[in-house]
Image (cartoon, rainbow over all chains, first blue to last red; front, side, top):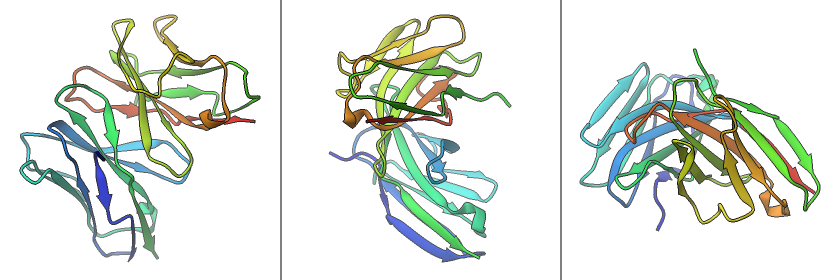
Length: 111
Length: 114
């Protein structure tokens, strides 16, 4: 089964708008992490939310976690053209430490 | 700010050749990982390493792959006899400790097998 599936697969918005990306998973997790990847580049860690947390903020980022629905969302407020990238959620299951990544959401912010 | 580094950034090799990908994790980190990302696909876990031994590996990590921490700073991934399908971006990551910690990724090595 797929772990960490994001939707939408692609999102195109105007600068200044908010972007919301969703992630669903299937197993019990220790934590969920969001990463950003510019085209062909490395993975930049954005935020980690633990299974006993419901919401976290970091600058313009807001992450929620609903363990009953096995889902998470990443909200980027007041988006900028520089936010254009792929965004991945990744889960760490209770049984290990490996990250299991989703397919990602390609966000395009138009100036 | 400390960061994970990887060398080389790009490697081109012939099928059947051995390659060694190198990583320098963040200095006080205890857990080390290799992941790969085939072009256009999602990031996949290969192996985790703690206390000088493999702690977990995926089905991708077969006998052609090995990892080593030859000294106090480097962490290497060796592919003994490369195949065309090994072409991918390989990422090293390190974590200070425990499953509740952030994994920090290096910039990756792009491997192309011809």
